[in-house]
Image (tube, rainbow, N blue to C red; front, side, top):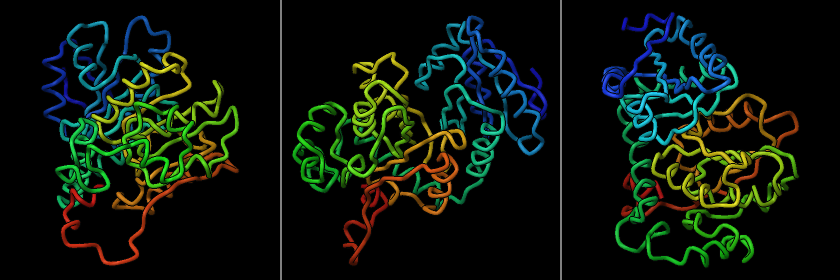
Length: 323
């Protein structure tokens, strides 16, 4: 197949070729399609339109069919099972996964930030990777700081901690299994969620606040959780499969960064976050993204931490600061 010139997609039919193409590309945009998907041409058209954008000439665009067993296996490695899903890879690692994109313009925006990330300073990439690795450890049941100490150590009573920072006993019980004790407050107490609304959670982790928001919506509206750590996404989706919301479409978990959200413009009523914004290297960009995705009259509800005194030397390592 010809290399991408910025005007067409490559169609690859086996997993080995797909993996090799991704590995050889600084930035890769993959549409996972399927012949049995009624909307396949709509999504193919969106990606093709993005591929024709001259500013994205350095991006490799791939159309991979889930009809092929090897491609399906590759997709499952990325946590993808639904056709119409777009995976954006940077340096052979998933950076953002967009389920059923709404427009080529939104796709171009996410791709543009991926291109920028591919040439980001090494120090920024290192800090980002430290945070990602720390939360991957947490998702796998390991302590961020080592041992059982620290606010994010393992072996703690997650339910008791959550009650201390503002969750009710009923909320703790409802979110059982998805609570990793990583919050510093209860953003839902500030959100005033109404039925039928769309709620977005920045840094959704194992899904604790998302499940509580879905409970408040009582089967109406939509909750979207965004997290940049693949291991957390795997955990939250597994929790979803085990929950009463499985298959309802009322709750989604997407891979992405809070500075560059895989969410359409003016599509959200409430943005919430719990002890995550402090981890961002570009907090102004996070707030710009909140404004972009919020509908007119939308609102923000988040709890977070700020430094009011000098941080001890032992907590100045990149991984300690990830907690």
